[in-house]
Image: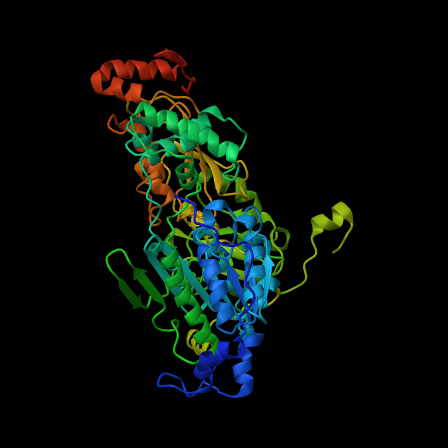
Length: 453
Length: 184
Ligand SMILES: [Zn+2]
């Protein structure tokens, strides 16, 4: 990969023709069109100004994130937050166009925010240089909608379940539309999720092809490609020799060690093509990124965000909710409705409120579950954050059996969630959110520390 | 935004769902719930046992296999299961904790089982993996070698391979490698 030519390290200021910048956008917002929903569309000044008050969260400031931030700012959104824990690598510069050579090593979220703020007057972009998991529900609660430009399925699953859990029937602001973009080479998708209402990321997990893995025995005995040699160094040579206590994908010394191992193995098998950057790519599972695919998918995501925010046109969501794009063979797009799954462990399975007397023993509680009409349990296993009682496997049953005589109030707290599984339920399982029907004072606590709280 | 909310309200009337009240507390993750489900459906034969160093952490456990037939009969083999929060999108990481002589398990304990890697799918469950591991002891497979010498040995001289397996299981030395004693 050759380095792109860096033209300038200074960020040009806003253009003088500021007033005209929003002209076409304003036309769309102030005039009804053939597709506007008369019940929802409002051309009043107050409604038009609404977009400026909405807080939008962008997750990821990489290839997609740079495009998304730029597009949102140019679509009239004024209060944008961006979260990304990564720092800028020199290899990002060919497509992550908000970054310059002098930014290498700095926070992606901070550099992207600074660049867009400078270019688009009046927009505020708040960077968060951390993991999405570092933020709590109150943080996510402040946004009107969330747009993801991520390359990790794990992070998508996390934000998805967080937004599903956020939904509170008493509070309509708790429902945050989630717009998710993803690309891989010439392919990509954009989708809109209304948490708890429409099919979620977890429902759609089968749309992600698992990473193509090569059998271990191929790596061990008959490598044929440079990637096989790198995987071998990564999985087997590292484990065997442990040159450092723990592999850090971002430590150049560690990648160099793997690169040298892989190169030696490639030479042994006469395989050309092992390079340092390929080693980094395989180890960090970097998927091939094409700038124009990112631009197309980010544009689609931001169009949906604009339509959801302004009601100017129908958006992806309630009916069709998934747009797949492929540029592999000329161009192809297909938009369809991905159905919500009743047995989805995240959204098909919202925790139901369950009243329980904390003075019951776990055994009595399990017996009472069997009588509930939706449950009809024969051999229920129950976990909260801790394992309360597992019927199987035998070792776990023996370890957890002493809990059966303990009181519910000693095992869990009011408001905790429990998961109930039972082989007789087939694919369905239950989550309950416990509501204690009376106060509970633990006898143990009274006798051990005399503190009744 | 109102539009979505009216859909939500309609859905609620339709479903007549109980409202969950109170402050938000600790949640059960999708990965944990799925592992709980897989474990509660596990029907282990007497030749296999699980062990949970921390019963509250069901994402990390050990499995022992005591084959009652085949060349590895009489041994007790230990595996660790490490399951990530990305389960079932990602397969569990399974390793043999002993140094054993087996064509599909290398000296570091890596296991060559297709459903642990290239053929893993989220519809597969822990039971499928455990059955697969058991099968490796009943039918070691020379065509997917992870320990090349053992595979070659099995392919060229089955009787000799059997003798080497017995000797390795007793803690003996095979082809300059000393193995761990795994006999019960
Ligand atoms: Zn779902």
